[in-house]
Length: 104
Image (cartoon, rainbow, N blue to C red; front, side):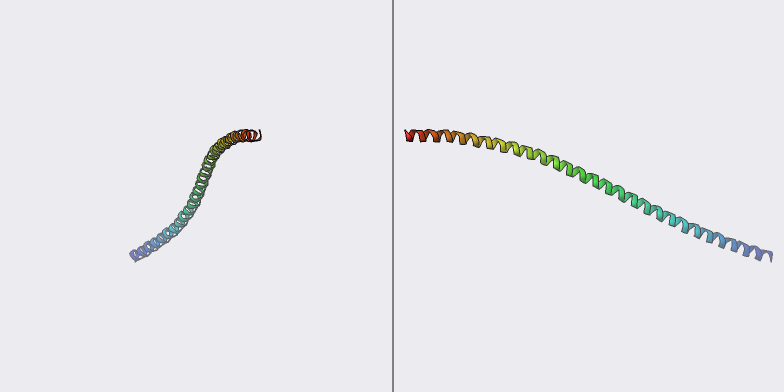
């Protein structure tokens, strides 16, 4: 009878141990899931910040390039305007000379 009692006690202890193991596993799995969620959120935030910084850098570089190009265009336009003025002044002098010749 003692052997049966010990067997029943051992079975009961094994069941208790199994239930404790199951409960511990559930708790651990919840902890792992929560940690994964937190890590995912942190990673997403880091990626968003990185993407924002990269976008800012791209925009800044594009603006700088556009400023340089605009300055170059302005310088070329200023040269062209000065050339046109010079040619126009030469034509005015020539026109005035022709008018004076025609009047005299």
